[in-house]
Image: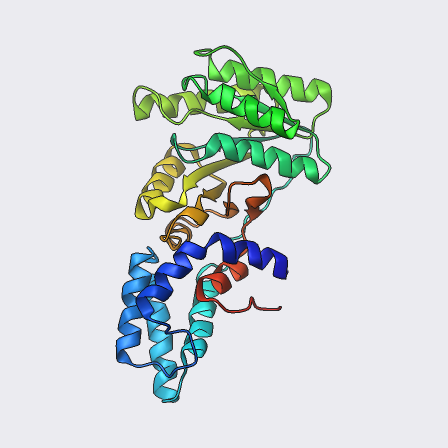
Length: 309
Protein backbone atom coordinates (compact mmCIF):
# COMPACT_ATOMS: atom_id res chain seq x y z
CA UNK A 1 0.00 0.00 0.00
CA UNK A 2 2.74 2.46 0.98
CA UNK A 3 4.80 1.82 -2.17
CA UNK A 4 1.74 2.58 -4.32
CA UNK A 5 1.04 5.66 -2.23
CA UNK A 6 4.63 6.79 -2.83
CA UNK A 7 3.98 6.58 -6.58
CA UNK A 8 1.00 8.91 -6.17
CA UNK A 9 2.85 11.22 -3.79
CA UNK A 10 5.86 11.54 -6.10
CA UNK A 11 3.70 11.76 -9.22
CA UNK A 12 1.56 14.55 -7.78
CA UNK A 13 4.55 16.45 -6.38
CA UNK A 14 3.97 19.54 -8.53
CA UNK A 15 0.32 19.82 -7.52
CA UNK A 16 1.21 19.34 -3.85
CA UNK A 17 4.04 21.86 -4.11
CA UNK A 18 1.77 24.44 -5.75
CA UNK A 19 -0.77 24.09 -2.94
CA UNK A 20 1.78 24.16 -0.11
CA UNK A 21 3.65 27.14 -1.56
CA UNK A 22 0.47 29.22 -1.63
CA UNK A 23 -0.65 28.16 1.83
CA UNK A 24 2.69 28.94 3.50
CA UNK A 25 2.88 25.75 5.48
CA UNK A 26 -0.81 25.58 6.39
CA UNK A 27 -0.56 21.80 6.80
CA UNK A 28 2.10 21.94 9.48
CA UNK A 29 1.52 22.01 13.23
CA UNK A 30 0.29 25.59 13.56
CA UNK A 31 -3.35 26.50 14.28
CA UNK A 32 -5.22 27.62 11.19
CA UNK A 33 -6.78 31.05 10.83
CA UNK A 34 -8.93 32.98 8.36
CA UNK A 35 -5.90 34.02 6.29
CA UNK A 36 -4.64 30.46 5.88
CA UNK A 37 -8.09 29.24 4.85
CA UNK A 38 -8.23 32.00 2.24
CA UNK A 39 -4.81 30.94 0.96
CA UNK A 40 -6.02 27.35 0.71
CA UNK A 41 -9.04 28.45 -1.30
CA UNK A 42 -6.81 30.24 -3.81
CA UNK A 43 -4.49 27.24 -4.03
CA UNK A 44 -7.30 24.77 -4.68
CA UNK A 45 -8.75 26.93 -7.43
CA UNK A 46 -5.28 27.25 -8.93
CA UNK A 47 -4.93 23.47 -8.99
CA UNK A 48 -8.28 23.16 -10.85
CA UNK A 49 -10.27 21.42 -8.13
CA UNK A 50 -13.28 23.49 -9.17
CA UNK A 51 -15.92 25.45 -7.29
CA UNK A 52 -17.92 22.53 -5.88
CA UNK A 53 -15.01 20.54 -4.45
CA UNK A 54 -13.19 23.61 -3.14
CA UNK A 55 -16.36 24.84 -1.39
CA UNK A 56 -16.89 21.46 0.26
CA UNK A 57 -13.30 21.26 1.53
CA UNK A 58 -13.39 24.79 2.95
CA UNK A 59 -16.81 24.30 4.50
CA UNK A 60 -15.73 21.24 6.45
CA UNK A 61 -12.47 22.81 7.58
CA UNK A 62 -14.27 25.96 8.74
CA UNK A 63 -16.85 23.90 10.61
CA UNK A 64 -14.11 21.93 12.34
CA UNK A 65 -12.32 25.17 13.26
CA UNK A 66 -15.48 26.55 14.83
CA UNK A 67 -15.74 23.44 16.98
CA UNK A 68 -12.05 23.47 17.88
CA UNK A 69 -10.36 26.88 18.04
CA UNK A 70 -6.94 25.19 18.24
CA UNK A 71 -7.44 23.13 15.03
CA UNK A 72 -4.03 22.67 13.43
CA UNK A 73 -3.06 22.58 9.80
CA UNK A 74 -2.31 18.86 9.83
CA UNK A 75 -5.85 18.23 11.07
CA UNK A 76 -7.22 20.47 8.33
CA UNK A 77 -5.20 18.44 5.81
CA UNK A 78 -6.80 15.23 7.04
CA UNK A 79 -10.24 16.81 6.64
CA UNK A 80 -9.43 17.98 3.11
CA UNK A 81 -8.17 14.53 2.17
CA UNK A 82 -11.33 12.89 3.47
CA UNK A 83 -13.55 15.32 1.52
CA UNK A 84 -11.61 14.52 -1.67
CA UNK A 85 -11.89 10.79 -1.04
CA UNK A 86 -15.67 11.09 -0.61
CA UNK A 87 -15.98 13.24 -3.74
CA UNK A 88 -14.23 10.46 -5.68
CA UNK A 89 -16.31 7.62 -4.24
CA UNK A 90 -17.04 5.13 -7.02
CA UNK A 91 -14.52 6.68 -9.40
CA UNK A 92 -12.08 3.78 -9.58
CA UNK A 93 -12.50 1.87 -12.83
CA UNK A 94 -11.33 -1.65 -13.58
CA UNK A 95 -10.36 -3.87 -16.46
CA UNK A 96 -12.66 -6.84 -17.01
CA UNK A 97 -11.96 -9.52 -19.58
CA UNK A 98 -14.38 -10.40 -22.35
CA UNK A 99 -16.10 -13.79 -22.27
CA UNK A 100 -14.36 -14.64 -25.53
CA UNK A 101 -10.79 -13.51 -26.14
CA UNK A 102 -9.45 -11.14 -27.19
CA UNK A 103 -10.67 -8.32 -24.98
CA UNK A 104 -10.60 -5.23 -27.20
CA UNK A 105 -9.60 -1.88 -25.69
CA UNK A 106 -9.87 1.26 -27.83
CA UNK A 107 -7.84 4.25 -26.67
CA UNK A 108 -9.25 7.60 -27.78
CA UNK A 109 -7.93 11.13 -27.35
CA UNK A 110 -6.48 14.19 -29.03
CA UNK A 111 -2.91 14.31 -30.27
CA UNK A 112 -0.50 15.18 -27.49
CA UNK A 113 -2.48 13.48 -24.74
CA UNK A 114 0.04 10.66 -24.43
CA UNK A 115 -2.22 8.10 -26.08
CA UNK A 116 0.40 6.16 -28.04
CA UNK A 117 2.80 6.01 -25.11
CA UNK A 118 -0.05 4.95 -22.84
CA UNK A 119 -1.02 2.14 -25.23
CA UNK A 120 2.49 0.71 -24.97
CA UNK A 121 2.65 1.12 -21.19
CA UNK A 122 -0.74 -0.52 -20.75
CA UNK A 123 0.29 -3.45 -22.95
CA UNK A 124 3.49 -3.83 -20.93
CA UNK A 125 1.53 -3.78 -17.67
CA UNK A 126 -0.86 -6.48 -18.87
CA UNK A 127 2.07 -8.55 -20.08
CA UNK A 128 3.72 -8.24 -16.64
CA UNK A 129 0.49 -9.62 -15.18
CA UNK A 130 0.76 -12.69 -17.39
CA UNK A 131 -1.56 -11.71 -20.26
CA UNK A 132 -0.74 -11.87 -23.96
CA UNK A 133 -1.29 -8.56 -25.73
CA UNK A 134 -1.34 -7.27 -29.29
CA UNK A 135 -1.08 -3.57 -30.15
CA UNK A 136 -2.90 -2.07 -33.16
CA UNK A 137 -1.29 1.01 -34.71
CA UNK A 138 -4.47 2.67 -36.00
CA UNK A 139 -3.22 6.27 -35.89
CA UNK A 140 -2.22 6.11 -39.54
CA UNK A 141 -2.77 9.83 -40.13
CA UNK A 142 0.07 11.09 -37.92
CA UNK A 143 3.32 10.32 -39.68
CA UNK A 144 5.32 9.37 -36.59
CA UNK A 145 2.58 7.56 -34.65
CA UNK A 146 3.18 4.07 -36.02
CA UNK A 147 6.93 4.46 -35.68
CA UNK A 148 6.51 5.67 -32.12
CA UNK A 149 4.38 2.68 -31.19
CA UNK A 150 6.76 0.28 -32.92
CA UNK A 151 9.70 1.83 -31.05
CA UNK A 152 7.97 1.32 -27.71
CA UNK A 153 6.99 -2.21 -28.71
CA UNK A 154 10.57 -3.10 -29.58
CA UNK A 155 11.81 -1.69 -26.30
CA UNK A 156 9.17 -3.56 -24.26
CA UNK A 157 9.05 -6.72 -26.41
CA UNK A 158 5.44 -6.30 -27.54
CA UNK A 159 3.56 -7.35 -30.69
CA UNK A 160 2.23 -4.72 -33.09
CA UNK A 161 -0.07 -4.92 -36.12
CA UNK A 162 0.45 -1.93 -38.41
CA UNK A 163 0.20 -0.73 -41.99
CA UNK A 164 1.66 2.02 -44.11
CA UNK A 165 1.02 5.70 -43.38
CA UNK A 166 -2.41 6.78 -44.61
CA UNK A 167 -3.88 3.27 -44.50
CA UNK A 168 -7.49 2.81 -43.42
CA UNK A 169 -7.43 2.78 -39.58
CA UNK A 170 -10.50 0.56 -39.40
CA UNK A 171 -8.83 -2.00 -41.65
CA UNK A 172 -5.80 -2.08 -39.34
CA UNK A 173 -8.10 -2.54 -36.33
CA UNK A 174 -9.93 -5.38 -38.09
CA UNK A 175 -6.65 -7.12 -39.00
CA UNK A 176 -5.38 -6.73 -35.42
CA UNK A 177 -8.45 -8.26 -33.80
CA UNK A 178 -8.47 -11.11 -36.32
CA UNK A 179 -4.76 -11.72 -35.71
CA UNK A 180 -5.24 -11.67 -31.95
CA UNK A 181 -8.04 -14.20 -32.20
CA UNK A 182 -6.07 -16.55 -34.47
CA UNK A 183 -2.96 -16.28 -32.28
CA UNK A 184 -4.89 -16.77 -29.05
CA UNK A 185 -4.03 -13.39 -27.57
CA UNK A 186 -5.84 -12.13 -24.47
CA UNK A 187 -6.00 -8.42 -25.32
CA UNK A 188 -5.93 -6.04 -28.27
CA UNK A 189 -5.13 -2.39 -27.54
CA UNK A 190 -6.11 -0.07 -30.39
CA UNK A 191 -4.27 3.25 -30.64
CA UNK A 192 -6.47 5.62 -32.63
CA UNK A 193 -5.91 8.94 -34.36
CA UNK A 194 -6.28 12.13 -32.37
CA UNK A 195 -6.86 14.54 -35.20
CA UNK A 196 -8.12 14.35 -38.76
CA UNK A 197 -9.22 17.15 -41.04
CA UNK A 198 -12.22 18.03 -38.89
CA UNK A 199 -13.58 16.91 -35.53
CA UNK A 200 -16.62 15.37 -37.26
CA UNK A 201 -14.33 13.39 -39.54
CA UNK A 202 -12.48 12.06 -36.48
CA UNK A 203 -15.70 10.90 -34.86
CA UNK A 204 -16.78 9.19 -38.07
CA UNK A 205 -13.46 7.33 -38.20
CA UNK A 206 -13.76 6.23 -34.57
CA UNK A 207 -17.29 5.00 -35.20
CA UNK A 208 -16.06 3.03 -38.20
CA UNK A 209 -13.43 1.29 -36.05
CA UNK A 210 -16.16 0.35 -33.59
CA UNK A 211 -18.39 -1.10 -36.32
CA UNK A 212 -15.55 -3.06 -37.91
CA UNK A 213 -14.32 -4.77 -34.73
CA UNK A 214 -17.93 -5.59 -33.85
CA UNK A 215 -18.08 -7.72 -37.01
CA UNK A 216 -15.60 -10.07 -35.35
CA UNK A 217 -17.10 -9.84 -31.85
CA UNK A 218 -20.51 -8.12 -31.51
CA UNK A 219 -19.56 -7.01 -27.98
CA UNK A 220 -16.32 -5.35 -29.09
CA UNK A 221 -14.84 -2.95 -28.30
CA UNK A 222 -15.21 -4.08 -24.72
CA UNK A 223 -13.59 -0.95 -23.34
CA UNK A 224 -13.54 2.57 -24.83
CA UNK A 225 -11.12 4.68 -22.81
CA UNK A 226 -10.31 8.33 -23.24
CA UNK A 227 -6.72 9.38 -22.63
CA UNK A 228 -6.57 12.97 -21.39
CA UNK A 229 -3.61 15.17 -20.52
CA UNK A 230 -4.01 16.03 -16.83
CA UNK A 231 -2.04 19.24 -17.26
CA UNK A 232 -4.83 20.77 -19.36
CA UNK A 233 -7.00 21.39 -16.32
CA UNK A 234 -10.52 22.46 -17.23
CA UNK A 235 -9.91 21.76 -20.93
CA UNK A 236 -9.60 18.07 -20.12
CA UNK A 237 -13.16 18.17 -18.79
CA UNK A 238 -14.38 19.61 -22.08
CA UNK A 239 -12.53 16.91 -24.05
CA UNK A 240 -14.10 14.20 -21.92
CA UNK A 241 -17.54 15.76 -22.40
CA UNK A 242 -17.22 15.85 -26.22
CA UNK A 243 -15.81 12.34 -26.65
CA UNK A 244 -18.26 10.83 -24.18
CA UNK A 245 -21.20 12.30 -26.09
CA UNK A 246 -19.87 11.07 -29.42
CA UNK A 247 -18.41 7.71 -28.52
CA UNK A 248 -19.79 6.58 -25.18
CA UNK A 249 -16.71 6.24 -23.00
CA UNK A 250 -16.37 3.46 -20.45
CA UNK A 251 -13.26 4.78 -18.73
CA UNK A 252 -10.57 7.45 -18.46
CA UNK A 253 -6.81 7.39 -18.34
CA UNK A 254 -5.36 10.67 -17.04
CA UNK A 255 -1.74 11.20 -18.10
CA UNK A 256 1.08 13.59 -17.21
CA UNK A 257 -0.05 14.20 -13.63
CA UNK A 258 3.63 14.28 -12.70
CA UNK A 259 4.20 17.29 -14.94
CA UNK A 260 1.42 19.59 -13.74
CA UNK A 261 0.39 21.70 -10.78
CA UNK A 262 -3.25 21.36 -11.90
CA UNK A 263 -3.91 17.79 -10.78
CA UNK A 264 -7.32 18.70 -9.37
CA UNK A 265 -9.00 18.42 -12.78
CA UNK A 266 -9.29 14.68 -12.24
CA UNK A 267 -11.93 15.41 -9.57
CA UNK A 268 -13.85 17.79 -11.83
CA UNK A 269 -14.00 15.20 -14.64
CA UNK A 270 -15.41 12.54 -12.30
CA UNK A 271 -17.92 14.84 -10.64
CA UNK A 272 -19.38 16.09 -13.91
CA UNK A 273 -19.32 13.00 -16.11
CA UNK A 274 -19.07 10.02 -13.72
CA UNK A 275 -16.75 8.18 -16.12
CA UNK A 276 -14.60 5.75 -14.11
CA UNK A 277 -10.90 6.60 -13.90
CA UNK A 278 -9.01 3.44 -14.80
CA UNK A 279 -5.34 4.46 -14.84
CA UNK A 280 -3.23 7.55 -14.19
CA UNK A 281 0.18 8.48 -15.58
CA UNK A 282 2.54 9.42 -12.76
CA UNK A 283 5.85 9.45 -14.63
CA UNK A 284 7.78 8.51 -17.77
CA UNK A 285 8.57 4.85 -17.03
CA UNK A 286 6.23 2.00 -18.04
CA UNK A 287 5.59 1.17 -14.38
CA UNK A 288 4.43 4.74 -13.75
CA UNK A 289 1.08 3.95 -15.38
CA UNK A 290 -0.84 2.98 -12.26
CA UNK A 291 -4.42 1.93 -11.51
CA UNK A 292 -6.26 4.92 -10.09
CA UNK A 293 -6.71 4.93 -6.32
CA UNK A 294 -8.99 7.60 -4.86
CA UNK A 295 -7.55 7.03 -1.37
CA UNK A 296 -3.94 7.38 -2.53
CA UNK A 297 -4.76 10.41 -4.67
CA UNK A 298 -6.62 12.23 -1.89
CA UNK A 299 -3.93 11.46 0.67
CA UNK A 300 -1.09 12.50 -1.65
CA UNK A 301 -2.67 15.88 -2.46
CA UNK A 302 -2.89 16.82 1.22
CA UNK A 303 0.30 15.09 2.36
CA UNK A 304 -1.35 12.70 4.81
CA UNK A 305 -1.13 8.92 5.18
CA UNK A 306 -3.67 7.03 3.06
CA UNK A 307 -6.65 5.65 4.92
CA UNK A 308 -6.11 2.09 6.04
CA UNK A 309 -2.31 2.38 6.12
